[in-house]
Image 1 (cartoon, rainbow, N blue to C red):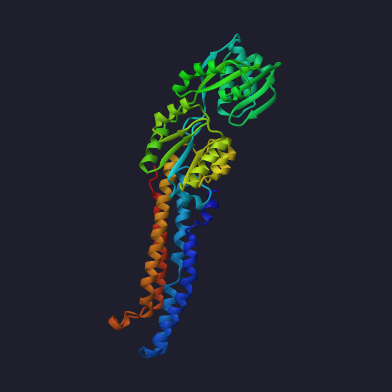
Image 2 (cartoon, helix red, strand yellow):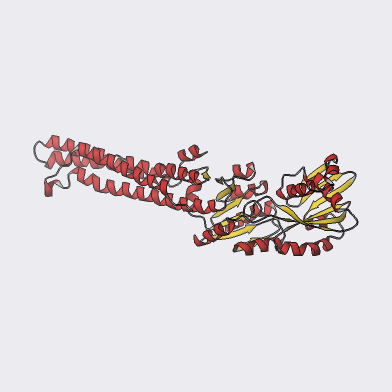
Amino acid sequence: MVAEAQRSRAPIQKLVDIVAQYFVPIVMTCSIIAFMGWAIWGPEPQLAHAFVAAVAVLIIACPCALGLATPMSIMVGVGRGAQAGVLIKNAEFLEAMEKVDTIVVDKTGTLTQGRPEVTAIEMLGAWDKEEVLALAAAVEAQSEHPLAQAVVRQAKKGPGYSRQRSAEATQFESITGGGVRARVDEHDLLIGTAELLDENGVSDVELGRSKAMAHQARGATAVFVAIDSRLAAVLAIADPIKESALAAVQSLHELGLRVVMLTGDAEATARAVANQLGIDEFHAGVSPKGKYDFVCKLKSAGSIVAMCGDGINDAPALAEADVGIAMGTGAGVAIESAGITLVGGDLRGVVAARKLSRKTMSNIRQNLLFAFIYNTLGIPVAAGLLYPIFGLLLSPMIAAAAMSLSSVSVIGNALRLRSAKLV
């Protein structure tokens, strides 16, 4: 992946291609003019001086530095990113990252550790707590969602797990952005959000909401468990915020970026996380399609958007964003949909990617400027502009050395990116 990125072409390379289309015929014209000028007005031997000047112009104007300016910086920049745990799929994303003004982040697995635990169980009705956990775990065992795995882990801690292992969920169905349903031991289970249960006519949902509010205010996610169309329990599941998340959000703000959090969790949970991290804006209860639509809305409003996520549900938004950034600890489809992958799943990698993009693009501009200035000054000197004043005519050998030096200078400038400070 790194090797492919190093061989890719950044959009800025198109500028170099356009310049090269005009540069070559201009240099050929300058060489012919120099030859004609020395052949007509030069000192004896006129023809010898004309050849020296024409060849010196062609040699010193060789666009090696111009051709190396972009790919050298891209190669070194992508390699430096890999060393910092930032894998860049294509040079296009490296260039686009410099222009990003809005960072959209998913909550679970991106801002949080992605390994939530059940912190409280609020029972409703006559069901036994262990029995509810056993039935719920039988269903959630077939889901890969982090919250589902938290329910399974909690069930394993109780004596009811032995029964759960013998029970098998059938008719399993995953409801995107809502939850899951299945049948276990002749019981119909529906597990997920309060809205999902409401839509399916489950009773006592409002009572469950009231029990969930206190937990949501502390940043926990409420998972509602309904058995045979009646609410049996509300599970409070908390996902600890990553230690690096606060520092990452602060650094993004210092870089002048707007940070927006999208989550499928309830508003109280989202608000608690946003307040802890100082996030500018958050939207709760957002479905996977809602995340995709939100990114589209930002782009249509003129924003340059980077989307950070780790799950299957984030994949459409990651693909739609100007720059998709996936957590390396997340789902494979999310990584495949993104242009940048943070190997360790640390949000500070977004800061590193932003700084790397700025430094790399600045380095490319420096290289291009040097190459243009070099050729602008070198061609007149090689053509003999200084001869009437100083009696100096540039030797083709010296022109070749100067041309090589310009390429070495561009390479040396690009190699400075190896020591770039990103965090």
